[in-house]
Image (tube, rainbow, N blue to C red):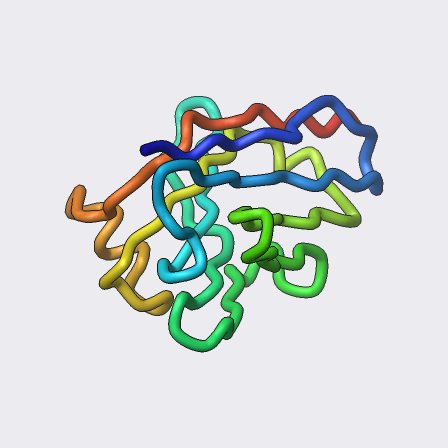
Length: 128
């Protein structure tokens, strides 16, 4: 049972990347799935979430309008399409999934160490 985050890399300012969060051993579609990021020397920030109940999507203010979260239940995968990337988007990106937490409270549950699954993180570097 695990989450596998992938798709990170080095991109220039204004470029795009697509991150994937693939689940194995459980059905990701039944879970709320969030993306978080942590830059060096900074606290972990919540980026986006997609609801397991109805597919509603949520975004942090810093990425709203630039990032899009989606899910493909057939592939048991959640994606984060990142566009108009900025140097301040540079961070390690993590995905996390939980069967009980709803998206507006996902960050709280993460801080409390109560999310079911975490991916291993994928590095995104945006050069200026």
